[in-house]
Structures are given as structure tokens and as C-alpha cells.
Amino acid sequence: MNTSATLTTPSALFVDDEASVLAGVALTLRHRDYRVVTAGSGSEALDILARQPISVVVSDENMPAMSGTAFLTQVRRDYPDVVRMILSGSMDPRSISRAVNEAGVFRYLLKPCSPDDLRLAVDQAVAAHANYRVAPPRKVARISVDDGLRSLRIAMQPIYACHDGGLYAHEALLRLPDHPDATVEDLLDEATHCDRLWELERTVRGVVATRMWERPGDSLVFVNLHPNSLLDPQLYTASDPLASHTAVVVLEITERGSLDQVDDLQARVAALRAMGYKVAIDDMGSGYSGLTTFTTILPDFVKFDRELIREAYGTPAKHKLVSSIAGVCRELDIATIAEGVEDQRDLDEARAMGCTMVQGYLLGRPAMEFRHGRSHEWPT
Image (cartoon, rainbow, N blue to C red; front, side):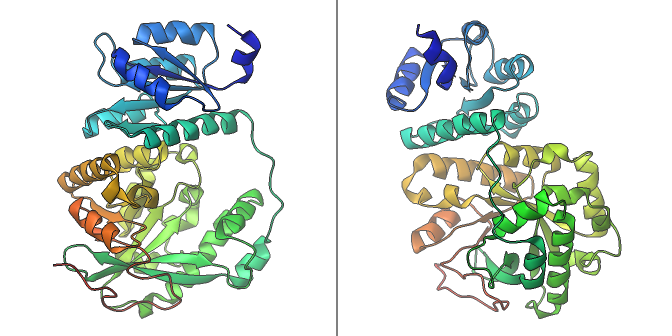
């Protein structure tokens, strides 16, 4: 073994009791920027982890001696820096809950997993491991918080019911029309860096509140909430700008920050619900955070990540994953929203997969005014 290469090259360890699966993985991931190591059992994998540095571990869930969740739970305890993923043929919510809460998985991959999906997932896991160990240098700010507060505008994107195309809600989206070289992410990053995120999000909620009278009929408004803003004491008081509109507001928790920093997450969400808010989680299917939030708070709405919806009609693994999660959500009385619906095939597929609602450019781009009524011919 070349020791220097082992120390400098990222490595992905795959654990499965079927040799043919491991051979297929090695073939699929050849020529990547990381080494692929394989093991036929959890005990063999633990021996490998004790002998050499490993960046990512991907384990089959159903193995004879030790389940993937049990194995990865031990990995989490003994090697917390290693990124962990499960590969399973089941979307049972109890299995997902154990994998997320006990093993702390980065991603829950569903069998059959296409070569492209596997490569993408492992590439992202290796990158996450590298980013965790070495923080990237901070970018030069493209916009100041003061400039952002002065110039921000709120655009509204419609959300439609899948069964009949009726208008259900709008998502309020932050826009910076006076600063074309800066993105919303730039402003949020700068506000976080300057410890002014609460100030920024309070301002956004204030602008949304002034426009609530414009919304069509009894439609709802989705308002994005950075996880850090769950710690803002004003959010839970009558002085918050949205406090008088809670019955028609859905607080959409984004994945821009870690929920690990939020103490008593369940209690905080319960307090918001007691005020009248509904709660959504964003980007389900994009990684560990979404699954964690789902199993912890059981939201009123789940929004599927646009990358999961895009061209799902031609990707069996995406179709099966979304259909399975949508089925679980139906059993738990949780509404599901397919984001990123950009053509007729996306719309047809979202309906076929059992999504409750749809959102995307095919149906309506973000606009400064609320959209009234249907914007697209609805299939029967």
C-alpha cells in the first residue's frame, strides 16, 4: 500500500454482503478523485477504519450480522468526522428515523441507485468531508447588509394544487433588483457574518406583512426562515410583523444553516404552531438535514428539492424515491410540493408521483405582484 497516497487521497468505503454489488460499485466509481475501498460486513469495515483514514462510508442497510444503521451508529461514535450514508431498498419511516437520528446519515440512498445518482451522492459526500475538515476562505462581500436592507424587494411565486390546478399559495422570495451582481445568498451570508441575520429576516417579514392584504382570497403565503432565526425571541411574540397573520402563513425552514444549533427544536416548532403558523421543510431529498427535520418535527408541508423533481420522468430512482416519500407523507397527513416544475413532463410526473402541489417556471415565475388564478392548461 502507498502510505502517502492513503494519507492525502480521499477514500470511500462501501459495505455490502453481496460481492457483485461491491464489484459494480468499484466499476461505477472508477477514475474518480477518491479511492474506493470495499468490505463484506460491518466487522470487516470496522477493521479497515481502524487501519486507515476513510472519508465516506456507504453501507447497505440489510446485512446478516449487523444492520447498516447499527454499523453506522458505531462509526458515528468512534469516527465522528467520517461522512455516513445508507443504501436501502426500503422507505419505511421508522428505518429512516433510526438512520438519521441514531447514525446521523448524510444521505439515505434508495435502491436501485443509478450510476449517475451514486456518483453524484458520493462526490457530494467527499466534498462535504473536505469542507468539514478545512473551512473555505470567506468570500469578499458583494453587498453590504445596509444596502440590502434599503433595496430588498419581495417577489411572489404561485403554488398550485395538483388535482385541479387551483391556486393554493404563494412563496415570498427575497430579491435585490438594484444589485444585479449580488445574489440573495450573498446578502444572507454577509448578514450572518455581521451577526445581523435576525435584523434582515425581521425586515423581510415586515415587508411581507405589509403585502398580506394583496393575496388572492384565502390563499396561504410561504415565508422562508433561516434555521438561526428560530433562535430569534421576537419570532415568538406579538410584536413580530407576521404575528397578526399566523393563520395564513407557512414558515418554510431552509437548509442554509444547521439545525444542530437550535436548542429544543421540537418545542420551538410547537410554540410556532400554537401561535397559528404552519411549518414546511425545504429541499427534501437533497441530504441529511431534510430527513432530520422531517423526522424531528413532522412538518405540515414537505417541498421536494428541484433537482429531485427535474427529469424524474426519465430517472426511475427519482420516481421511486419521490413516490415513496409522498406516500409516507399522505399517511401522516403531510402535504407535498414539487418544486422546479419547468415543463409539461415535470408536471405530469409530479402528479403521477402523488405530489399534492406544484411550483415552478412552467406555472408561474416569481413576480412583484400576487398571481390570481390558473396560469397553465391543466391536464385532466
